[in-house]
Every structure is written in C-alpha cells, then in structure tokens.
Length: 197
Image (cartoon, rainbow, N blue to C red; front, side):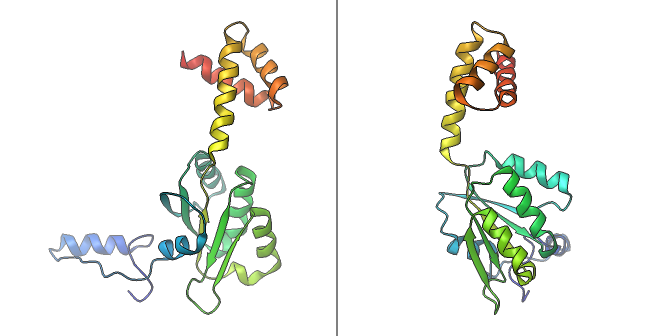
C-alpha cells in the first residue's frame, strides 16, 4: 500500500483474510499510521488510548456511541469523513462540551492542519474555513476526567443516605435542592441505586 497502513479501517482486512485462506503468509511492513501520528502531536496526556475507527454515519448511532464515550477515561482516537465532521463535532459538543479535542487533517501532507481547542472553537474554525472539511481527518478526544467520578460518588452517597428515610421522589428532590443538579438526573440515579439492592 502506498497510502499508509492498510487493513485497519478499510477493506484491506478482507484481502488479508483471503490471502491467508489461500495459504500465503501475510507480514506487516510498518508504514504511516494516522493514529500514532495524531497521538504524538495531540498533547493530551493519558496512559492509554482506544482506537474507535470511523464514527457511525447515522446520527442516532453516532449519538449512542458518543454517549457511551462519556465515561471512558482513556484518550479516544477516531477517524471522520469531511462531509460528516461538522455534525460529529456538534454532537460531541452536545454530549461532552468540556473535553479536550484535537483535529488532525491531512497529516504529513502539504495542507496539514493540527488544531487542539475547545469543541466550540473547532466548530467555528471548520464553519469559517471550508478547506478544513476536506481530506483525511483524525480526531483525538481526551478521556473523561476523574472530577465527574467524584461528583457521581458524592451524589450516590447522598442519595443512598436519603433513600434510607425517604421515597425515591422525595430523596431525588432533596438531592437536587442541595446539590443544584437537575431533579430528573437525581431521580434517575435514585432509581438506579434502588434497583441495585
């Protein structure tokens, strides 16, 4: 291949399977890797990362995946196509607006773009410069912060105590009043904690 390492996120995997099934040996020759190249310049610290391939094209599937990423602490690396980048970034902003994100486009080529910024700024950049919607795109997304885990733990402790003496409805209302979180969120979590027992 003269276009980077094949068989990672392209039809090359089928070719490899057929060649191997025909009895031939398949050996890797290390070449360009957009995943590693993007990670090396992201400046996003994480002990490990998850490679997610291409983000789903259907909006509902994309949002389901992004919601699942809310609690992943590893850095996430994914590919995206130019014609979907705006919609994907908008969905990311809706799900985890605080995340550090880097866009790497056309890595090592003449019109390379490497931008690490907030999702709001990245969306603005892409809307104002249509050239950023061309070429091969890699997204590097910082993992969920430990702060959210601590907030969740504190809410769980509060709700667990309140549920000893109050109904789910009353406990979630009081937790919402004390913490400032939405009652709907507190109610849902109270239900989850009740069903654990």
